[in-house]
Length: 477
Image (cartoon, rainbow, N blue to C red):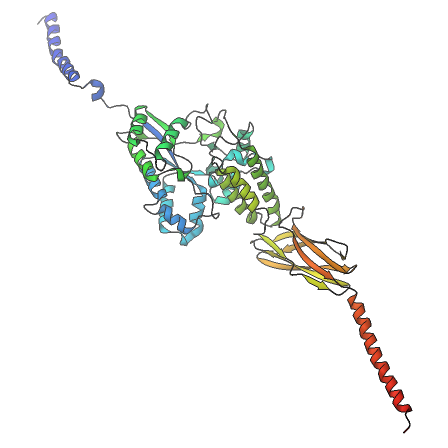
């Protein structure tokens, strides 16, 4: 066979394969479709944040309802874990379950164990915005160490999630100094940060999983798969998520071979410029001024955390709701309801009384409800000059979970009615409770008058007796 002939044979052998490819293309197949398609990749963050309000810790009843097999948290976590999504859990939830110890509901403990095994992202208490907690003077900013103290989560494991509604040009440096090593970022707030959450996609997801939504979940998932995937997050507010619709969306996203990639928070050192908008500066300033007072007052205790921990927990829950329409109202409510520290230290003066002597003592009882010794300053003043308080201010040390009575000596200057005003302060003069008043009726001269009348009556009786006795002796017998 010649070379030319050999070439012809080779062409003849190639011909059938070309013909087969042509036939396959005509009936709707191609080499491109026959080969494996490019798989969409999704990095999904699913937050589970405790509801606002109520006590510092969730009750066993609340945890049972949320973590039972058909509870919203259980359904959401089960779907996320099964598809390789990353959970972000409020540290308040972790502490609530662990604080119950052996009394914790079985459903809650098993649910929390499965969440921990999935390697979640741990959020600050109440998912408090780290930039909000840093919008005050340096001594009163909230660090990850403080957040660790109130939750038990290691400081290095706590991840901040800025809302874009708080912060200034000093915020990034401030939170680095406060111990934050990583943040959850989205491309609207951090437009120059690689790997940030897609704000646009997350907004579509939020609309799709909202309770009562009519969004076509399958159609949305198909569009996202055709786009090749995305980095996205479900809404921060768990109330804004219908767990059934969220499960359906995750099922649809990861259909047809889509892959999951673990969501990774952004290293603070890699965060670029950030954009904030519509910052409610007045409520934030009021909130952090309240925190400043809490921190100063907590110094009355030998262990300041007995006061600062419950106060900081409630403040973080409010700070976590900065994106809500009631944020300003919630701040005012917190400040109004916590304008004293009577949940920790109280005092009582007793009821109104009358003074008949020139000097007396006013008893005042201070009660310490905390598990730490406290040192306070009690002060009693008269609202008029009728009485004089010999020692109006006294420092009082009250042992843990006990009461101490102190007395205030006073002298009467004139008769009449007056009020005594008592206050309880820190050693630096900050008020701990509302002032208390007691009415006092001073009739100091009654002591001398009574004695004079008594002596007069006795003298008169003696005189009459003597006169009668003399008279009887003078009568003739």
